Image (cartoon, rainbow, N blue to C red; front, side, top):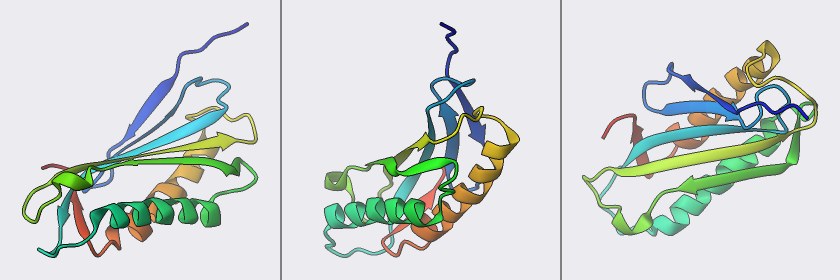
Length: 145
């Protein structure tokens, strides 16, 4: 049995987000993950229910992936979203760390850093950032605190 260590690739072209993708087995991956992290700053000093806002962001990511993922390469019914953001410490004027890890299972055997995979990710990641995080009216996201 052939074993191969996982690999992770950082994408440095986004000014407000830290983005990376990778796989546990780089030669024959069964799944691919995308990590998006940033510092979130509330846009207003309202007494908003941040638990509801965070759940809504998670749902928007999942819906976006379901509607915009290449179904020939990924199993869109086996997608996991782990949005980690503590709602208890969110205050106006204070940055809160946000980490979103997306795990997508592959239907085909594609090497993690292949041109086909990079092409899919170059479409998928910017649309997630724009449609879900940039269009969020509750938070403004920044790469640094």
